[in-house]
Length: 233
Image 1 (cartoon, one colour):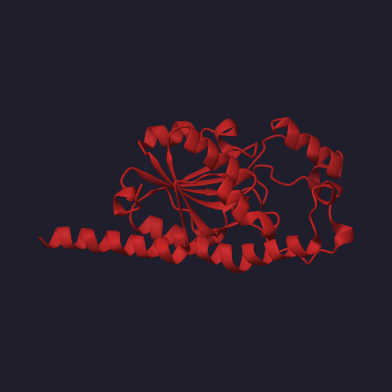
Image 2 (cartoon, helix red, strand yellow; image 1 turned 45 degrees about the vertical axis):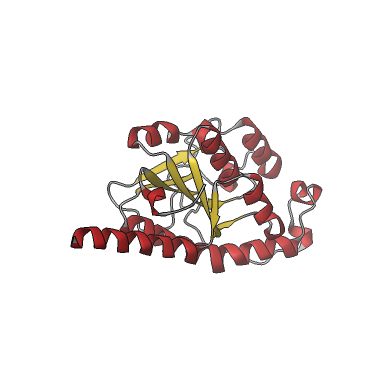
């Protein structure tokens, strides 16, 4: 399969878990959650992931958002957002993890609808007519109405950015591919909990296309040139 400007026909943009919030401080190994230590995380890897997410992925994501908007793609922004303070509407696995980490101090859980972290970044400048959806599990296809939305929009091709490549983004895009959508990942507009395995997560998700931001923007420019030529004839 060859990537060309016809990919943008019947296409939607999907951002997974880019959310409003501030950059956290540097971590040391002693501050890592116990579960992360069990999984082999190191503070250096987590800090590298944060650096890439804030310094590379987020600026690139803004560029991709603006480019997709400029060619009229349907814009979909997925974020964490449980409804109830005690998280009873969360995926049970996620809820159990939160209980193990924070107990019943629900103020520390984050992600409740209406909280600062439960919405897309202000920098994305979401507009009327664009779609913002909350999910309550890592895979948006089992915890939101994204599948209904995409079918109602009549799209078959999806441009993905966001994270984590080994969790929410990876599981959502894998489900999309399994359901018959053609998937494209803008690789340097993604993030992960640890930087050392970010690309591994992308590879395991088996996207139909993986490109970098500059390549994606060049494809958008090519599409704009083709449309301008058609209008001139």
